[in-house]
Image (cartoon, rainbow, N blue to C red):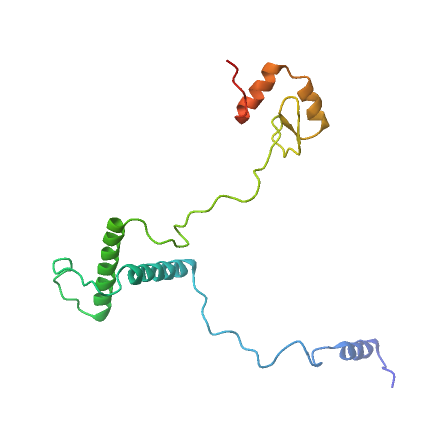
Length: 174
């Protein structure tokens, strides 16, 4: 059946091309967003510092040592949260005192020192500062390309020594 007017033809074409009623296999109808709330950076840092302090507390103070009688406050806390805060403050102060008297803290992510690098030291051109794949055997200067090599050949021995001195590789003749 042919449409009688151009508007009807246009509407019929739109109905044919309409894709909203087609099933979408890529969409999972059972999917729901996660109910877990994302944490801010400050929350993650505070949790990490609490976790680290707690770990330090368990390493240095295993429970065999009780706080000294005069080291805690005599005021009674009004609720459990204040009591927990006072206890954690007391434990942290005690652990800090132990760490200062016993020496260095155990290595953690925040205080570990890096080992020396196993990669070779990068070499840079003494003239331009660019990466230097070549070294002049006569003068010992490092250079980037043949243009710089031509410049190095035109240098006097005193100028060569000045460039080497800048790098810390000069020789002192007595």
